[in-house]
Image (cartoon, rainbow, N blue to C red; front, side, top):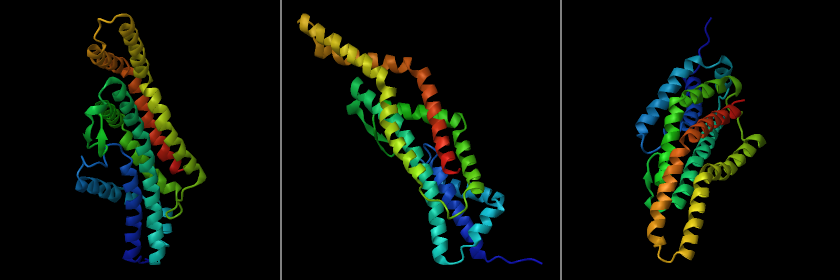
Amino acid sequence: MTVEVPIAAHVVVLLAALARIGGFVSAIPGLTTSAVPMRIRASLILAVTIAMVPMLPQSYTQAAMQATTPGAQVLLVASELLLGLCAGFGAKLLLEITVFAGELIDRDVGYAMTAAFDPSIDASASVISSFFLRIFLVLFVTLDGHLALLRSAGASFATIVPGTFYVTDDVTEALIALFGRILRDGFCLSLPVFAIILLSNLVLALMARFGQEFEIMMISFPIRLGLGLFMIVAMMPVMVIIFTGLGSDIISWTDLLVR
């Protein structure tokens, strides 16, 4: 004996999975920007959803099919979309650490006035910010961070019943902590350059005070630029470690949501 399931129930399951996976895909750095065409993003989300739907746990599909009224179906899809949006929003906040650190360095080095539109973040960014962001994106993809996010999305179907996700106190506290990390980690990342530029400014001030023949305004910019670029190159091994940990934090954030 077979039990026929209305086609609408299957559509609800597909929409719920599509909303959740779409949010997790948006958490992949560099993917959900204007640099990637909308049809490419939509096709990727749809392809991942179609690939995952046959492997969904039976508990998930049964719970989704229990939403029989239009109101319940809308709330179910909205809850799934909220889960995905939280995953993407947290990843975006962590990504802002690299942008903020680059902005601080650009201000000290003298590149602050060279800001241009960066399609990878859909906003204006300075030279060092764009450089840091691209280093992070290369490391994240190289270390299969995008695949880890998709695995988290797949694991969430077994741990979170559709329509039951809501922003808990733990999630709220974690989001507030992410806002604080933008300032703390961004400043720590730019601190070596800030320190060397501060030291150079003190030396230049002493030269201007005791050596009137020095054209301080003429030599200050190339000195700051050279010292800043030298410190960035010297920091590269440490930056790789920091950015690798930042990618792990993005994955940890999604894992926190799906527990």
